[in-house]
Image (cartoon, rainbow, N blue to C red; front, side, top):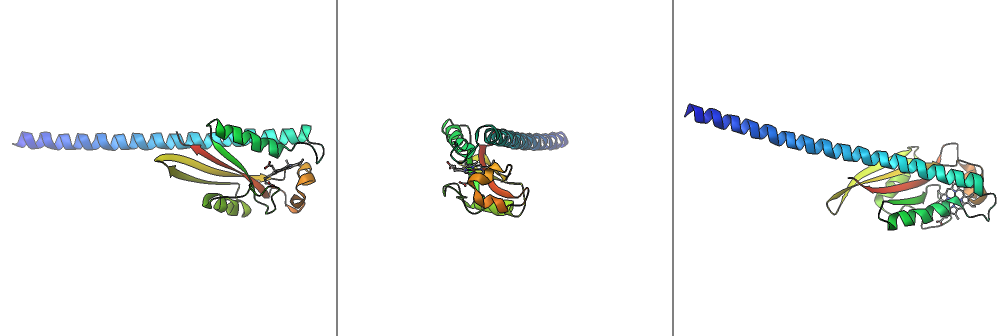
Length: 173
Ligand code: HEC
């Protein structure tokens, strides 16, 4: 009888340990996936912004040239259509050239409010159809005098102030 009790106690303890180990392995795999996704956002943000600044610098000389912003919007449509991720170019300053480039849902509206307060990054981990998504917004300041050529309202922006944003939705995997 005593042996049975010892065996049972051991079994219960071992199962408990295994279960909690499984839970913590699962937890750390989820943490790792989330930090990989955050890193992806940082990488994409750097590539997209560097490209827009380069195009503006080298190719956009007058108001009639094809804007890097329009090229970015076309690129973002292709990226989403090809199933990679979703990214939108948004207005924060309050006077967009295209009305479609405005915050659409509660996440984006909260993000615009946070960026207006001076935050440079805003995020939310959401769940869609049982799958985790990272939603993230990063600030766009007026990076060149050329921006004002087409966006007159940017002339009043302070250095570093967010006049726009990129809004990302990436699967956490
Ligand atoms: C040659 C004109 C031109 C220049 C220069 C230009 N933009 Fe734009 N920008 C546009 C147009 C046109 C759109 C609308 C793009 C679309 O939706 O097709 C736009 C859209 C945007 C948007 C989205 C909100 C809106 O107004 O629709 C942001 C933010 C933005 N531009 C930031 C910038 C920044 C920052 C710079 C400087 C690096 C810049 N732009 C330079 C023409 C320009």
